[in-house]
Image (cartoon, rainbow, N blue to C red; front, side, top):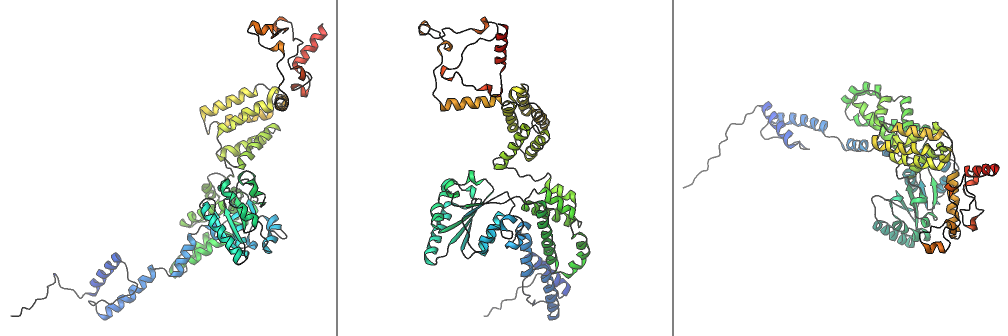
Length: 512
C-alpha cells in the first residue's frame, strides 16, 4: 500500500499584491542589509521584479559610497596639519636661514650630502616635516623611529640591516629619530659606533636643549640646526594655504550627489571664505606653532560649518580659551622666563617684570615656585639696600600658601613691583662669594686663641680666650682682630666702600 504524503499547508495564503510583497521585502532588507546584486523573487511577477530591481539598485547607489568617495572620506578624516604638511622644500614655510636660497642645509639636501644632525626647536616649527622631506629627496635608505614608541631592540635591528646594506650595495642608511630626547643616555650610546663608522646617518628631532638631553659624545658627532618659532606672517600664509585644502575637500565630498550640491551651493558660497583678520588673530595666538594654528582652524571651521556661517574672532578665542603659550615646566623655556623675570627686577624695570610674571602664571606655573625665587632675589639682589624686601617676599610666599590661585596673583604682582622698584645692593652676595672661594681654595687656618671658647680650666691654661675684649665692656667698637692672622688683610664685605663698623671706628678715633 502506497502512502502519499500530503503537502504541508501554509498558515495563510500568499497574496499576489505587489505592494504588500515589496513592503515585506524592503523590511527584510532593512533588517538584514541590502544585497550587492539583486535576485528576482520567485513570488513576484517578472515586471514587478524588474521594477523592484531598478528601484533597489538606485537605493543602493544612494546609500553605498563608491570606492572613490570612501577614499575622499578617509582623507578628510586625516587631521588638517597632516594633510597640508609640505612635501618638498619649495612648499616648506619658515627657517629661511637654513633652507632659503643659498641656505647651508638646503645645499646639503640638494647635493645629497646629509650629515648626522639634530633639529632643535619649539613644537610646530617643521622639524619632523623637514626630516621627512630629506628622506624623500635622498638616495639613501631611510628608516623612521620615535623616541616614544620604539625601543632599543628596534634600533639595533635597524643598525644590523644598515651594516649589511652598506656591505652589499654600498648604500648608506639614514635613521630619523623623532623625539630623540626621550631616549636615555644608554640608548643614545647605541648610535655612537654606527655614526662614527658612517654605516648610519642620524637625524634627530627634539624640543629640548641638546646640551642637556643629548649625550655629549653623540652630540659632538652631529651638527645641531636650530629651528626658530614661525612668525605671525608665516603662520598666516600657512593658514591661507590650508583654507584652500579644506574647502577643496568639502567640495569633493559632496560632488557624488548632485542634489546635495545644488542645495548647499548657496550656503557653501556664504561661508567658504574666512576673513583675513580672523586668520591673523589665529596666527598671533598660536605663538609660532603651525600645528596649533592648523588644528584650531579646523576645529573652528567644523563647528561653524554645522551652523552654516563664517567663523569669527570669537570662535578663535573660544577654541583657544587663552593664548597658546610655549611653556614647559621641566623644559628650557621654564628657565628662560624665570631668568627674564629675575633680570628685569634686577634692572628695576617693573613693567617688564610684571609681563614675565604674567607669562608664567597664565601658562600654569606653580605660584609657590615663583614666590621662592622672590625670596632668593630679596637677599641676593636687594640685600642691605632695603631690609624690608626679605620680610615682604616671605610674607608673599605665605600668602600664596594661604590663598592659592588665582587670588594670589596680586600678591605676587605686589612683591615683584616692590622688588623691581626698590634700591639694590649685592654687597652681601658678592662678599659671601669671595668667602666661599677663599675657603675652598686656601688652607683652613686655625681659629685665633683669643676667639676660642674656653669652657674648661685646661683650655684656659692653653690660652683659649686669653686677651679677648668683651665688647659690652667698652664704649663703641673694639679694635680687635677677628680673622686668622694669615688673612689679616683679606677684605670680603668692604668691596664697595666703608662699612658702618669702619665709620664707627673712625668716629671713636676722632673722639680720642
